[in-house]
Every structure is written in C-alpha cells, then in structure tokens.
Image (tube, rainbow, N blue to C red; front, side, top):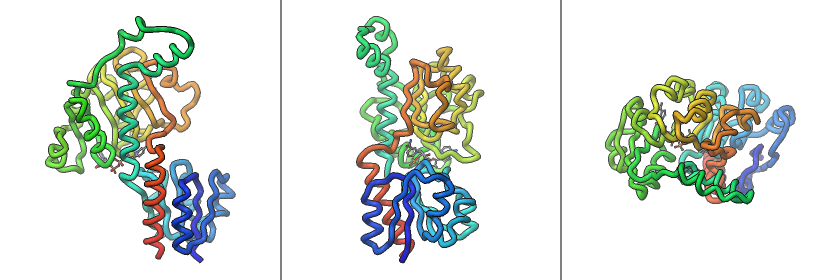
Length: 307
Ligand SMILES: NC(=O)c1ccc[n+]([C@@H]2O[C@H](COP(=O)([O-])OP(=O)(O)OC[C@H]3O[C@@H](n4cnc5c(N)ncnc54)[C@H](O)[C@@H]3O)[C@@H](O)[C@H]2O)c1
C-alpha cells in the first residue's frame, strides 16, 4: 500500500483525503531528526509545512520517496536540486494562502500607522497615553505602496488596498506590464520603486539571487526616508541589523515583520525592542480558511501524482 508521512501539523482534511484515496497515512509532527529519517523510510509521499527542512540527507533515508508536498508557497525549505537528482517530485500550493498573507500585510500597515500595539499595551496597563501617541498617526490614503513581487500575494495586496486610495508601484521582472496596469498599478524599476515607496511590501521568493535584496546600502541610501517596510515573505530578504539601526534612528518610520532571518529570532534581536516595529511569529498563512486550502490542495496534487 502507498504510504504517506505527514511530519508537521496540518488540517485533518489532508490525511482524510489520503485515506479516502486508499493510502496508508502516518501523521507524526515534531519528530527528532533521527526518528524522522526512520519514519520516512518506506514512504512514497512526504508532507511538510515550514519547520522541517527536506535535505538530501533526509531524502537519502527515504528509499521509496516519489513526491514531497509542501503545504505552503515557498520552496526554500526543500533542497529542490537534490530532489530532482533523485527523481523525487516536489509540489507546493502557491496562491492557496494568498488571501491570508495579504490581509496580514494590511493589518501590519494599519497597526504601524496608528501605533495600535503600543496604544493597546499602554492602555491595558492603565496608562492613557493619548498625548504621546497621537503625535505618530498618519494615513495610507494618498501614499505610494511599492510591491516587490507580483504573484498571488502581491496581486491580492494590490486588490485590497484599492479602497485606501494609494498609488501602487510594482516591480516583478516575470510579470508583463499589461498585467500590472490591468490590476490598477504601475510597473516600475526596482531602484525607482524603492526610492518612491512610502510603504514597501515584499512578495518575492527567497533565492540566492534575492537574499539580502534590502541590504544595508538599500536601507540607508535607496529607500525613501520615512518609509514603512512590510516583510511577510522571507526573513533573508532583508538585512535585519541595518533595518533595526534605521528604525531606531528614525530614518524609517516603521516595519511590520512576519518573518525573520532566524526563526524564532533571538531574544536580543534589536528589532523586537523597537516601538515602531510590529512583529508576528510567521503567521501569514495562519487563518482557518488558508489552513484548509493548503491541506486540501497538497493532498489533491499528491494523490493525483501518485496514482
Ligand atoms: N508569511 C507567510 O506565512 C507566507 C505565506 C505565503 C507565502 N510567503 C512568502 O511570500 C512569497 C510570495 O508568495 P506568493 O504566493 O505570492 O508567490 P508567487 O510565486 O505567486 O509570487 C512570487 C512572485 O515573485 C516574483 N519574483 C521572483 N523574483 C523576483 C525578483 N527578483 N524581483 C521581483 N519579483 C520577483 C515572481 O515573478 C512571482 O511573480 C513566497 O515566496 C513566500 O516566501 C510567506
């Protein structure tokens, strides 16, 4: 019987679909590396999310592995080259969590422009800091939003902000200008976008070519002073130390971060101590709807592939 290992927490629809298709399923989240290698031996399919790294070593422990399915968008946790070399297919679920990520982007933007987190923390502690906090508010309306990456999430963000009356600039070398303008945005070179954006939101994959895209030099010399950076894509896209310095000295107005170079970030990461930063623990895809969407999508694709 075809066997599937699901080694991270996932909506129950995923194992149900595999069982209904006649597969044997083991659901074992949180295995130590050695036990994971033992569990994957003999499996034809492996389902992962964000935590388990699918390395060449793990694949070598899986002598019958035919397909790795990532219930999520990016593939940076999977050694895709090593999979290809071993004849293992890698599947993922692009777009299935785009709505969830895009809504978090909007939430972070609004939390930053109105200082919602410090306002809540102060009032919950009994401090009515109206005078101190009212000096910080600003509006999205009339501002420029720069989107780097215009795939499923970037497009959804553009659709959502339309009601805020923002100008939208898009940089995505793989998307035709006509698609950008049809979405009510303006195609842009990267340098021009970085210099013009009041809000910069990243929606591109982390690859060797995009790592450190928002480098120290970009942060201090390329971005518009007073800009707000939103990163719900991947931590490695941004130089975190430089970002923290720029935020601390007020060169940038704020940052909303769902992802970090190292997750979880160390307790002494300076970004965690700044009042003009809102952080979330990689929650972009964590809505009830998107959990079901990715679980159903990856099971459906893997069943089709294995049958
Ligand atoms: N925070 C989360 O929980 C969460 C959830 C989903 C996705 N993500 C991240 O968000 C990213 C975007 O997700 P998506 O579903 O829109 O992916 P997608 O594949 O639909 O879109 C990515 C877009 O980035 C573009 N791109 C690639 N290289 C680029 C470059 N150098 N400059 C500009 N654009 C470039 C591609 O052409 C593509 O249009 C993913 O790669 C993933 O890392 C995070």
